[in-house]
Image (cartoon, rainbow, N blue to C red):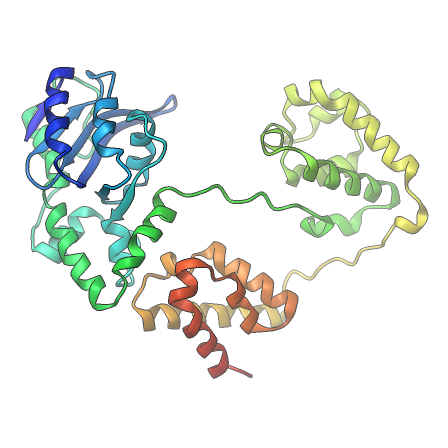
Length: 371
């Protein structure tokens, strides 16, 4: 273990690290209402462990020259926060290939989120304690025991990686890990889904003029740029605006969830456009809506079927349900089935590695569970 506290020592450490192409990486940081502050970077290529003081060394880009090469792999445990902190700190565009031991564990068993201590015990028989987990990582100097604790977070990653790869190789899943880790540790933002009248359960209560306003607000909101949507009232507030039909900025800002600053800047234009929507609306445009049911037996049965599908497929494949079929994806599958009336069509939502792993078992389950 070597503590790196200045640029000269960082240059020497980087020269050694450049000799490898796999890096065992972890970070220590402090989170507060002001954000997250990177404190320490633990990195090794399987031999010497370097503890890089990210508070004393302002320019960490030399480390990025080694760790940011496209041909290398980072081995982490529950590395979402580590990746999020290191990419900007090392001034690299995005992380290279990733192997996360938590993800790899979930890909060969039912447990999605386990601690590093748990893996050390299960795979190596080591019993460790989180003696410094709640310590202050901003204070300096860091005591020797705290530094040793930090080093232990990468010390056994090479052995754990080796054993996990052996298990995954037996399941023929080792090649899936970089893709899954990329998805889990460097997630792309979810595409913004357009809203409609169906997005509002109580839209059926609106009269002719109010429904015309809501139709306008739906089009207006969908046409906003993503950045504009973040500053504007959230979609769930549009029904309240249509119901109240505010006459000025003061009326608008009194509604719950409407930012006052935004209302002051935009109320005039928005209210004028709402009035135009009412004036231009025709009686033929009004569609009396029927309130949607709060529950149906068909939906209850579909939810039960999806729960059984999720449990059976993941048990059969020996993969954690939260990894293979997260709740977000189950909802998308449910929506397709409700729209088409065909359970097999739910497989249309399986993409990439999930289609490869789950596609055939999904179709087989559908065939075996036909009413």
